[in-house]
Image (tube, rainbow, N blue to C red; front, side):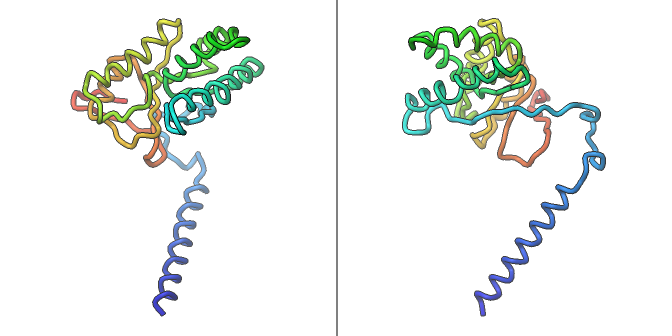
Length: 206
């Protein structure tokens, strides 16, 4: 008897969830209040999330990232001017630079990569890696942008976006530091879908 009741409650819960989900999906764009985003454009692009060193080891991750993610992207982007791709952090670009300069036959990939970043077809996040912000000291957060956006600018490139889609924590001062570093936007996850403003104690916003 108890199992029947539990099953019935479960089925009702699933049906209610589906009803809410599909009701929200059926809401047309015209019915929504887009606020300051009204009349704007939505651009879709590709991004493959990979931790700096999670699968097996950092060295194994680096090899997979260079050979199976970034190298093919450079080829696709060169041949398709409307193709856009995002790399989450600059350490991945640094590793790719080393790969192209130390692997025979790959030398031309690096100038191609830099040109694609300059043209906007490849975007690189403005931090060194995607770190657990609340585990860093204030200086550590600053160095993320120093080794991130500053390194890109030294290449003649730039970025206005930071990515940190995996770690589920935000440091209180993140937006303030990003604002002073010239980073205007942040791509995040583990929240409900939408666009958000992040306000800090000094009222810096992202």
